[in-house]
Length: 114
Image 1: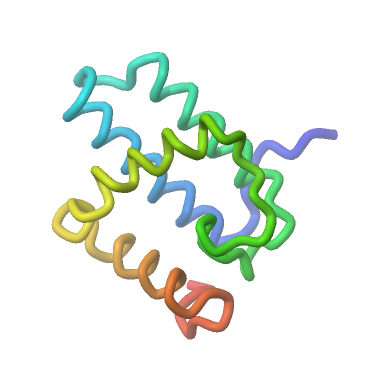
Image 2: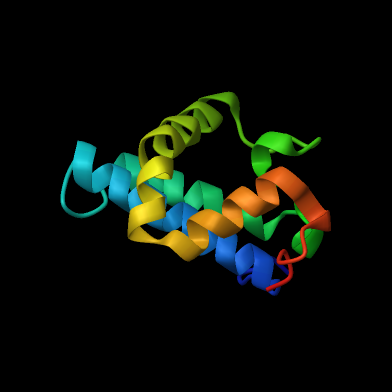
Protein backbone atom coordinates (compact mmCIF):
# COMPACT_ATOMS: atom_id res chain seq x y z
CA UNK A 1 0.00 0.00 0.00
CA UNK A 2 1.37 3.38 -1.02
CA UNK A 3 1.65 6.07 1.62
CA UNK A 4 -0.56 9.08 0.81
CA UNK A 5 -0.28 11.37 3.84
CA UNK A 6 2.37 12.65 6.19
CA UNK A 7 2.19 11.48 9.80
CA UNK A 8 5.00 13.58 11.22
CA UNK A 9 4.35 17.18 12.30
CA UNK A 10 7.84 18.02 11.14
CA UNK A 11 7.25 16.67 7.64
CA UNK A 12 3.86 18.39 7.46
CA UNK A 13 5.57 21.69 8.26
CA UNK A 14 8.25 21.01 5.65
CA UNK A 15 5.50 20.23 3.14
CA UNK A 16 3.79 23.53 3.88
CA UNK A 17 7.09 25.41 3.62
CA UNK A 18 8.16 23.98 0.26
CA UNK A 19 4.68 24.38 -1.22
CA UNK A 20 4.52 28.05 -0.19
CA UNK A 21 8.00 28.63 -1.60
CA UNK A 22 7.11 27.02 -4.93
CA UNK A 23 3.82 28.94 -5.15
CA UNK A 24 5.55 32.25 -4.44
CA UNK A 25 8.34 31.50 -6.94
CA UNK A 26 5.83 30.60 -9.65
CA UNK A 27 3.68 33.66 -8.96
CA UNK A 28 6.66 36.00 -9.30
CA UNK A 29 8.41 34.21 -12.19
CA UNK A 30 5.73 32.38 -14.19
CA UNK A 31 1.98 32.77 -13.61
CA UNK A 32 -0.49 33.74 -10.88
CA UNK A 33 -1.48 30.09 -10.37
CA UNK A 34 0.93 27.17 -10.42
CA UNK A 35 2.19 26.44 -13.92
CA UNK A 36 2.65 22.83 -14.99
CA UNK A 37 6.39 22.87 -14.29
CA UNK A 38 5.92 24.18 -10.74
CA UNK A 39 2.98 21.85 -10.14
CA UNK A 40 5.20 18.93 -11.13
CA UNK A 41 7.97 20.15 -8.80
CA UNK A 42 5.48 20.55 -5.94
CA UNK A 43 4.13 17.02 -6.44
CA UNK A 44 7.66 15.66 -6.68
CA UNK A 45 8.71 17.35 -3.43
CA UNK A 46 5.62 15.96 -1.70
CA UNK A 47 6.40 12.45 -2.97
CA UNK A 48 9.96 12.74 -1.62
CA UNK A 49 8.65 13.79 1.80
CA UNK A 50 6.18 10.89 1.82
CA UNK A 51 9.07 8.48 1.35
CA UNK A 52 11.50 10.12 3.78
CA UNK A 53 12.76 7.44 6.18
CA UNK A 54 13.83 9.99 8.83
CA UNK A 55 10.41 11.54 9.64
CA UNK A 56 10.72 13.78 12.74
CA UNK A 57 14.50 13.49 12.80
CA UNK A 58 14.78 14.49 9.13
CA UNK A 59 17.58 16.98 8.43
CA UNK A 60 17.05 19.71 5.86
CA UNK A 61 17.61 18.22 2.44
CA UNK A 62 20.89 20.06 1.84
CA UNK A 63 22.33 18.43 4.98
CA UNK A 64 20.92 14.96 4.35
CA UNK A 65 23.15 11.96 3.65
CA UNK A 66 20.45 10.48 1.38
CA UNK A 67 19.93 12.66 -1.69
CA UNK A 68 16.59 11.39 -2.97
CA UNK A 69 15.98 14.18 -5.51
CA UNK A 70 16.92 13.61 -9.14
CA UNK A 71 19.65 16.09 -10.12
CA UNK A 72 17.35 18.15 -12.39
CA UNK A 73 14.66 18.43 -9.71
CA UNK A 74 17.25 19.23 -7.08
CA UNK A 75 18.47 22.13 -9.22
CA UNK A 76 14.91 23.41 -9.63
CA UNK A 77 14.33 23.29 -5.87
CA UNK A 78 17.60 25.13 -5.28
CA UNK A 79 16.44 27.89 -7.63
CA UNK A 80 13.09 28.11 -5.85
CA UNK A 81 14.77 28.27 -2.45
CA UNK A 82 17.30 30.89 -3.55
CA UNK A 83 14.47 33.10 -4.75
CA UNK A 84 11.77 32.41 -2.14
CA UNK A 85 13.88 31.66 0.92
CA UNK A 86 14.89 35.22 1.84
CA UNK A 87 11.35 36.43 1.18
CA UNK A 88 9.86 33.80 3.50
CA UNK A 89 11.12 35.77 6.52
CA UNK A 90 8.61 38.49 5.70
CA UNK A 91 5.78 36.37 4.28
CA UNK A 92 5.88 33.37 6.66
CA UNK A 93 8.33 34.15 9.47
CA UNK A 94 7.50 31.12 11.64
CA UNK A 95 8.17 28.64 8.82
CA UNK A 96 11.32 30.48 7.78
CA UNK A 97 12.74 30.53 11.31
CA UNK A 98 11.88 26.87 11.91
CA UNK A 99 13.67 25.95 8.68
CA UNK A 100 16.73 27.93 9.71
CA UNK A 101 16.76 26.29 13.16
CA UNK A 102 16.50 22.83 11.64
CA UNK A 103 19.20 23.68 9.12
CA UNK A 104 21.58 24.85 11.83
CA UNK A 105 20.85 22.28 14.53
CA UNK A 106 19.29 19.40 12.59
CA UNK A 107 17.49 16.69 14.50
CA UNK A 108 18.86 18.02 17.78
CA UNK A 109 16.96 21.30 17.45
CA UNK A 110 14.78 21.96 20.49
CA UNK A 111 11.88 23.04 18.30
CA UNK A 112 12.17 20.34 15.62
CA UNK A 113 9.25 18.30 16.95
CA UNK A 114 6.69 21.13 16.97
